[in-house]
Length: 169
Image (cartoon, rainbow, N blue to C red; front, side, top):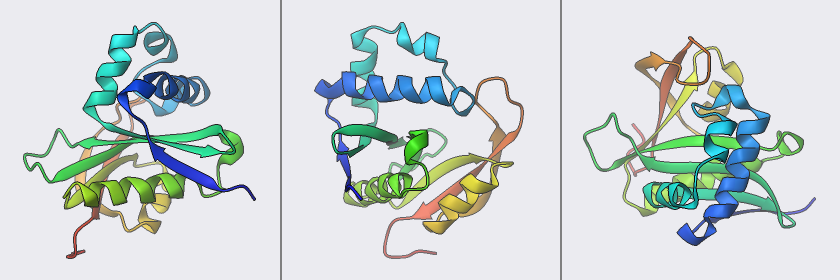
């Protein structure tokens, strides 16, 4: 099996992020807040600004881009040492082949390196597979809920949290 490589994207690689993001929006429109049509129409500056706002990781296998995840601030939190994992997507042919795991592990390592103490990840309450996946990495459920923010859905999301410091409590 080919090796999965996860690497950070720089601002100058905005086109790479755009390509993978648009693939995600086209393949899984129900999983994202934005639509493919909205983001496809955005100019270069929009994408560059996005690259500066959050840390973007791409997973590649033999030069093929097979997944993406972002890590940034958690807007609901007042503490600067809390981050949020979001925008996780893996190409259908690569699901179940450790791509998502590699992305999450690298994002957690990045968060630790940035001095983050916790990392939040919002998952639909009806998404048992997503909750189980996150739990396998040590994410634990919280009592926080919010309305689902994806296209045309009214279910709730639950905030899962991963302790990144020495104290895993």
